[in-house]
Image (cartoon, rainbow, N blue to C red; front, side):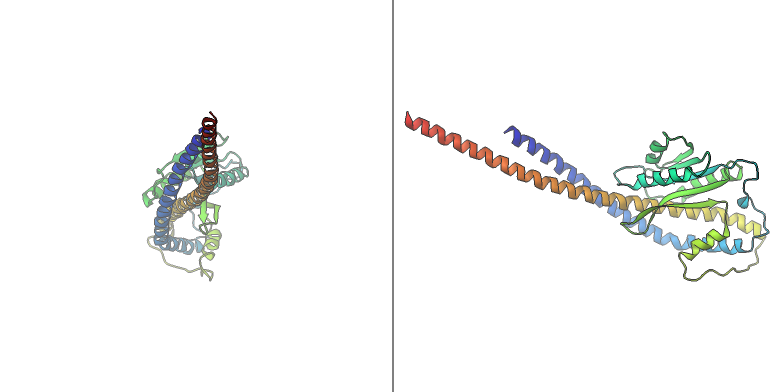
Length: 296
């Protein structure tokens, strides 16, 4: 009886866990669909900004701007890495892959600075030797443009003050629901060739270097467009990280539910065998008692 009770308690615990994993799977699926719709709706707008950035940069060889400033010879440059992780766990290897990529990137630069987004990343990197400049958290909800603007304003202010010489962003790019890969992008200082290469990934033909007349000046248009461009990159990375997180959690919960169902099936067999053995033993005891009473 004790064995039956133990097996039944284990089955009940697994059944409760299975209910949680299935519920989390459904929630992640709904959030994934919503996040992908938002990304598809906003991507054309920010792609247009990216094209405009290249058009300006194509003729900006002689234009002076703070966004082209590089570290002078003899001055140590400070590299900042914007790291996008989740606020919650149970997402498989989603956060672990980001940690590995960030550590590899930081190993290539002396004294890197981290700007974190997500509670999981903060709990991990607080024990690392890297300096944490700031930590943002949006409580596991779908990011909006205001969130991207908050991060953008902070990064640009630090860059223009001369505290940072280069800024990279590390996030998870969702190629498909089963292919989630950490991605590194340099957002500052700006480089026309890199922007052209990024555009080539979305366009079949190389974008022609067009010439426009800018009012009041090319530099004024450029300086007004840069924050929008960086905000677009960060917002796209935020949404992609969000949908990648939901996809990773959905896959993890599907696998957890599958394992729980397999464990339940195995325990059910053990429970049936133990119950049958218990019944057989009780029947044998009854028969033995009847035989003893008959002999008396």
